[in-house]
Image 1 (spheres, rainbow, N blue to C red):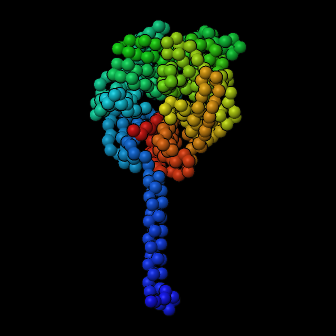
Image 2 (tube, rainbow, N blue to C red):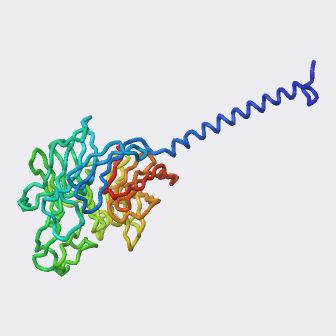
Image 3 (cartoon, helix red, strand yellow):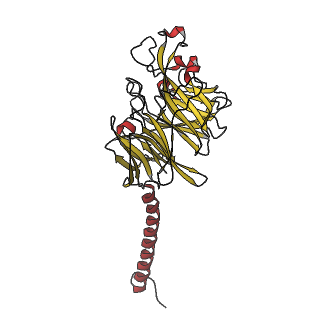
Length: 388
């Protein structure tokens, strides 16, 4: 017999083997913990679509980047490009984007929009058709036939929802707002088109109560400048009931509209919100609407305001639409430059993919840790940027 004591060599062999096994176990455990960390710090998969431009450009370009920001494809266009999107309709891929039409009517001395035609393109970004504003009701397209670039919803090749900024004279501004007679305003026009026909149209000037909602560009006594009192800049179909939710930047307001009657179903934000908002829940000069988490949460970019709050946030609302209450709310401050104008946001898992609009950057950040997984500084602004 032998003794496992410090004097016996077998003792040291057994101790060495034990320590080696412990070391290997620790190494494996550390490696397993490190692997997810390296994956977390990578940008999410997908290709990035954007249309960089500088105001006054005579031509434009579509860009597709890989997830690291490297250019995969570029395509030149006849005018500035905005709102480059990709759609998958039951396996059929389509791209849409608006091209500024330099030859078309531009509202004089108004620079808050890009007027042009909407392009529907195939899976190779080859143009299938162009879409313009349709004549309908009191909308005369003999002079103004352009769409606005801010948003477009593709449903199929013959069915889509468009928006336009339409210059018109009005006499229905409430007298307590001290309006000039026959004042020119920019009417927000929404048209739903199917098979070449307008099946639904909404004209913001048909709702005179909305003039008082404006918080910017609302001096109705001033006849020297056209009044862009609402500035529609986004819309999204509510997947819960197929009605339309619209964003009006110059009123800090979202409206839900009935897609049959045009009636306003509710206000969120603005001066007369149907949902009670805490100070933290109030948003300013917002852009880009989307539904996430199987349609349970409404998300958008809360740009902020240069004077009131020069920081930008991503906000998510879980609304009880029947009770007009907010069941849940979250806000995430964008860890980059203030996005005063334009911009967009998407969410992939816990990651926000953000376009900094006029601040010229793309950013992906983990919403839980705040870790940036992708950042690219652009040499030009881009209205929106999307990852697919």
